[in-house]
Length: 267
Length: 334
Image 1 (cartoon, rainbow over the protein chains, first blue to last red):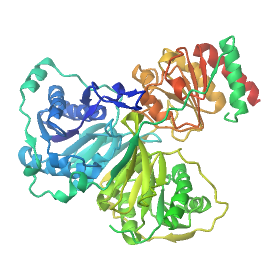
Image 2 (image 1 turned 90 degrees about the vertical axis):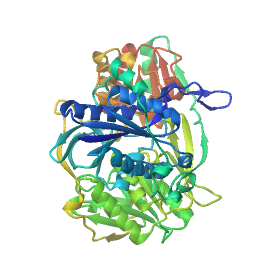
Image 3 (image 1 turned 180 degrees about the horizontal axis):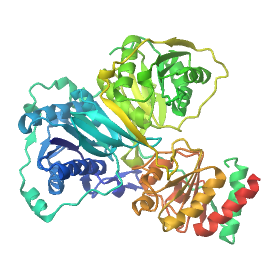
Image 4 (image 1 turned 60 degrees about the vertical axis):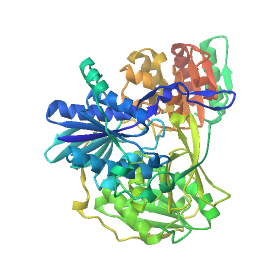
């Protein structure tokens, strides 16, 4: 079995603070991490490998040179091989252009590593929150997709996926090759081992650039290949805390609250 | 692709029984404004099996036209069948704009469809407008876990597509039912659907947690202290007919299942009333609930950030506040 996991290095959004004077995001000093949902995708691949030890796990990321740190972290946890996709020509890509570049990169990595039975992604990145790149890669590759997966197991020629649903979880059968995006499962992803960490630190991570995809359409990448543009961005106005109820006792405060809610017709 | 019309389309997601989910009907409300500004008709697109009821609802909530695709292969949502149907309709009729509810299925289909059309998609929007300079739809959405808002346009490709968060807009009945209805004869062959639903697991021990459609949510966080601490939360939810939610801290501690989690790694909700009990209000939690109409915070810590977004707050022990609140509401309701 051959599984590709797409990961993104993101700022840890739990550490982001707002500068109250300028009302802008403070990005300096915010640590970079492997996107949380991608760690679930990697864990799902690792669990397939637990059952089928001849599985090869390859991780792929698009980003600046610094994203190699995120790839090394994946190597130290479960991945066997890592590739970085990086080129100035890719800068400014929206989700459509990004997924187009990544689908080209996946074809290229397949030439080097063999065909993949499945491509795993996180449900969404915690910085952009779009949840679009996974399904868009699937469309470029003409693969079937399952999103919001919790668990997966190999099943004959395809996979059986436990998918989070609105009215109960679903078990879905999907043929291979396919693309699966993962959300938060009931278990925590595994930690790196010391031995793997040392090996990961020494690992050479090849970088794929636009030159490696001679067939790529230059009109469909980067800023000019992106149909969507950010017109403006702003820090949302905080709704001010309106009314703190402070009676003599907690019980009295509770009664007052019940009456206020009743008067406001919200209950 | 070039738009063939100035029409604005709203995709009406259906349930297994063919009735409309709320979000599509909600989107007909802002859809009306945008369609009027764009100078086109407001068209509802209904896909499912036995969709007569959803078609009627779309008409009642303001659509000028309804295009329906009905067939057994559409009974349960599949990426392949639904994307194929919408792609076919868009190629044929060429709308200028498409709104899709940002439900799990909407966000599964949206990127698949926009990629096939090679056009732009903006995910999970919370505000819609027309950019006055260019006439494009201005899609506004949160990013960085709600820390930043971005307004996005798609100037050169059509249709411009966005998924829109459920609960942001309210359903608005038109008072009439006079949409021009057209059933499109379109079908997808079984071999073109590459996923198969084997089983739906409805945990018998636990009720289905439908946070997205709840009018009232009572949520517990770290401050409830343990699984037992959810009892007063549940008691209050029961008298209000509310759904129980939770913060990530309570889920990670194993006090309640992930199905209850509200926030960036859980559900995004916008009920009429959200009561946060013992929840400090990390930005990831706020990202999932700050769109609620009315927010109540009950917390011991007067500096908890949850108070910054609350309409009403009580600084106090939830184990004293909740039972008293539950009793008083019982009295008011009787």
